[in-house]
Image (cartoon, rainbow, N blue to C red; front, top):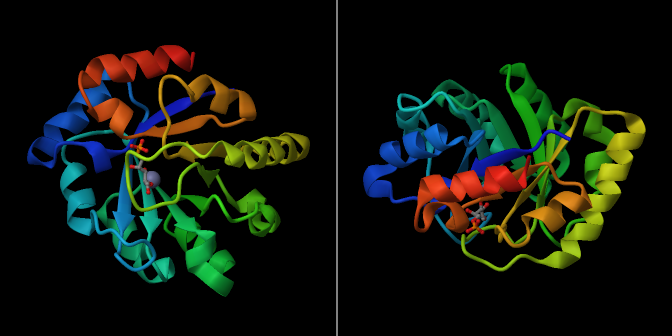
Length: 218
Ligand code: DX5
Ligand code: ZN
């Protein structure tokens, strides 16, 4: 299985964000993961459209935009125009507009992904799996970086991987929250193949951290 590393800039030093993104790109990261928080769907506030637009000038990395906002369908066009390559929306934020939101993402020529919180089952994702490039199984409750991984989520990853493989669908499973060099192999074993890591990439030697993750993911 092809594995990818998606460093989350939530843990980056925003005073030199462009340089930090250039550093992860040079070190071999596959995606840049951009956490968008609205202070409503999650208690925290983070980045918005200007950051996506501005960073686009610094890097050729795939922009993996994780929307932790209510009514994401209202904002897909703006994120598409700003430079998102893939957009992930939360099942819990879409309500009965989940399908329409995914179609809206695809309509802008982007890769569509759907995220589930640790307390959300995989069931709502299954009927639309053939429309998705990726499912994001959150391994912490969304809102903050630097939390400890919730290992109870591994059973959902395993279940989802077996369904995706059985249907022979080209759908990645991304994990996000508390991913470290110590647990990445176990999470991979459960069936994930796209790994978001914030704290563990941006604290300390960024180049060394990216390289260590990549060597775990060969
Ligand atoms: C949490 C965010 C994550 C977060 C991960 O709501 O979606 O992307 O930045 O950070 P770490 O790797 O520090 O848990
Ligand atoms: Zn995220």
